[in-house]
Image (cartoon, rainbow over the protein chains, first blue to last red):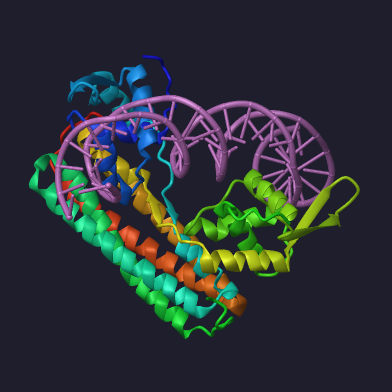
Length: 192
Length: 192
DNA sequence: CGTTGCATGTAAGGTGTTACATGATTAC
DNA sequence: GTAATCATGTAACACCTTACATGCAACG
């Protein structure tokens, strides 16, 4: 129980997943992050999760319990402690909130549109729009599950936000496509 | 002119800024990134830019020219080479495109809403909405400048996307606020 | 006379990724 | 039988940030 104070956000994300009260393994946490945090924040690598769990355990923020599957397999499930809950609350209530980050690799390429062909740009934008549609579908499914359990009212509220967000992405990319199609092709046939 | 092949995205971002043909210093690049890339991608730290410029110079993708300001100050401006332009084109046309990332620290806290008070959540959401309004204003100003020069048609198209994006954020946060206000306060008065 | 802007760069350190090592179970 | 899923963890490495070092010019 050291007084560390500067944990990486990943640590709080893991602690947050455990704050719903369930006992979860590192593997469970990764799967859940992939189906929730990923849509509005970020899903850490599995090795990163194991690393943070180790640190949280040393700090006394989580406790592990060995689950005997059979002889050789060692599975451990983690539970948040009162100290962990207090640390999470302090982070939510007191830590300064970093600005949101959007990192879109397609937009970076479009921004550099003068370097390549219109054909390539349109293909990139089309792919991104299609991918946004798929993500929207995934979020919709998550949202339906969250709505079933009142314990997930806050995740559901965020998933509604995510759904809206993906829908506005779809529209924005459709509009961008029209804009690009109207622009002259600076480097025709440059792409493969 | 080694055959490196796996440059970090930051290197291509810097190369991209130089692909508009102007001779720019590291300092110039940082300022420009802050006013453009930041809104849809990311603005690297100034030290990072100098590091990438060094690498790009070794690869022969950019060339430097010393600008004698006065005796002691040493300023260098960089220009993209044909090799650099080819490398940038290859990256845009051939490299696989990573999925877009949204990292929103307010949404992470709202997702964990059961841990804190409604008061705190509403304050966070209000701040984020206000900040989105400010960013939208900044983007609007950039867009007006880009529209003046036909060489910036692609940046302008992306800035239009960014403006739309910020507007949809504003609406989505307003809607999230209404949802949260309707939810029961799980931990009243827990926040300072 | 202090802060901001201009201007460049190095060094140390944190954060996170991929690759590796290991092995059982289940589904096709 | 081979791929995917379950399951844990370490090690090496990439990437990027902050802090530091240095100094002039202009504004208030």
